Length: 247
Image 1 (cartoon, rainbow, N blue to C red):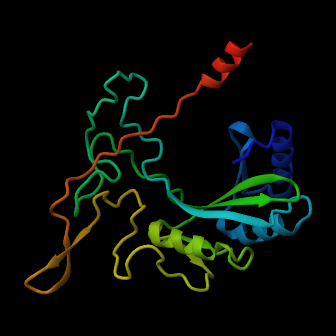
Image 2 (image 1 turned 180 degrees about the horizontal axis):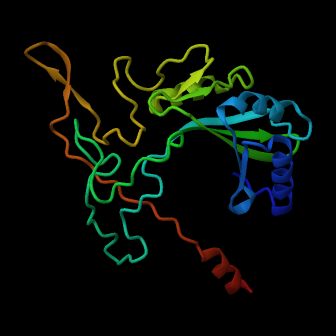
Image 3 (image 1 turned 60 degrees about the vertical axis):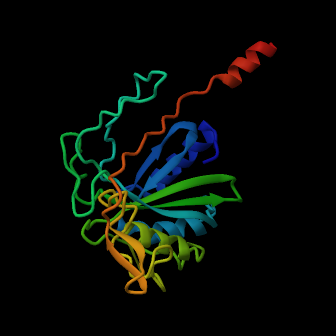
């Protein structure tokens, strides 16, 4: 998200708190990025207000995505002590994604599931061209067994395919969507591949059977469970160094 400036961001954050208050939460991150978290019961009314009321004027929706907070904050890698050989690969247990077909996350390093109603969330990014500002909205689904969030297609029609993608990959049901179908995976795909309890190797593999003369699906047997390598972002001092050298 673009840097909105601290004064600009703080002013918007204060007005959001004053306007929505109650069960809404306003969080300001580094670089003035603002997140407004709303309960499902307040979601649609707040979205309409953010679009229509002149002081906000968020007429453009940029993105809708799903988030699975299972294992959020889990630290399996020691990224503070890194040698020229990279990170240690001493990973124990079967954390999110690191398990075979038919298994479940487990092990000493596996963080328990989040609090009820705090696992699946829909996140929206909005843009106000009129005021040159951006805003992130977040809504948690109350029921983790069947996560449901109201659809915003009637407010921002461009959300249509974004919500279908979040449904396909995370299993979040957008109530009121006119045509909620899978959009990226096969019609017969089982599960939702971006969920943290979905194995990185997948559930089934596809191959052509010469004897049967057709493509068949079967449980994964030829792929070993994968370990994801973390991407660590550190402060880059090259710009400051170049400025100092020129000065």
